[in-house]
Amino acid sequence: MQTVMEAFVHQLDPLLRRAHGVREFTDDPRCLLRVAIGACPRDLVLCDGTRLRRGEPILELHLWNERIPRMPPEGPDLAWGLQFYRQAIASLRLIARWMESHPEARKARALRGETSLINPMRGLIRDLGFEVFRVERGASGWRWLRYRMDDLYVWMLMQAYNPASLRGKCLYQLERVEFWISRERFLERYGNAHSLRGEARISPPPPEGTQAAS
Image 1 (cartoon, rainbow, N blue to C red):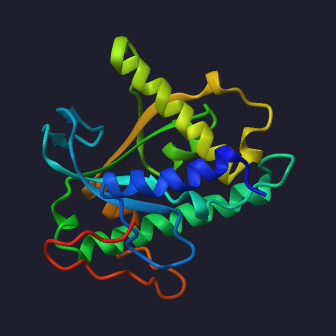
Image 2 (image 1 turned 60 degrees about the horizontal axis):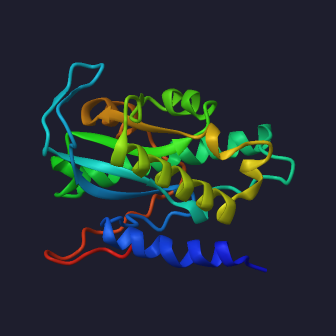
């Protein structure tokens, strides 16, 4: 039976996805990610030398919370970790194939995600080829408050969709990070050279002027 908080999150999450243009680009059940076309928030140089200018098109990555494998009550174990990692790899390969065929996504110069996470997750994100930046360092005033509200919402999402992930953890352990990878490096790692087992079912681009369902 849903708690009041879980019911609230399940109603709010779709509204926020629509507001941010987050879309489901595939119906493949392995996929753990949704995407949105975004703009680079600031000038940035990535580790492979890619120079990004503020306002340039990028692809934003968003967790598909309903698809995250359910953790056992005692928390994540090796079996859960392997399942999550394999689905993460499959998801990124699906995105690469979608980017190569979708006109709007072909303009994206990099891929970016932003989330609140607990320290051990940094290593997993780096293993997937992304650079990780802590974005709250030196934040104050409204920015600091925004990050704390983001942390709280991520905590609520985790509680609603995968409560075992919070076992033995506290809200103050969350830290706000960005993770980035250039388009070239991403496609080199996850593009056509890396085939998926089975057919990846990629949704066609939405008609001009319409918004894909989120």
